[in-house]
Length: 72
Image (cartoon, rainbow, N blue to C red):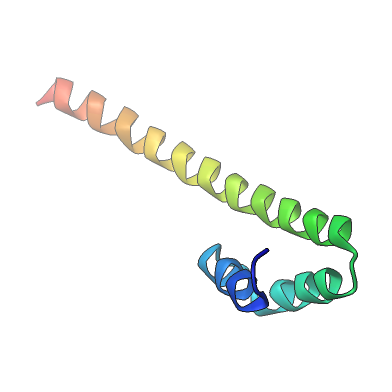
């Protein structure tokens, strides 16, 4: 079993905002693990959406660089 300090550190490392961390820990302490998991899954989804958006931007730059290099 992980300690609460381990859980809190992991939440920080995962970039969870303080409010989310507090909500998760409240759920965890009261035994509502499924509620806590739902919070973590929502945060994961938001992070992944951000990754996909950044990937789209990179693809746009790659496309532009490719065509500019062909012209050079």
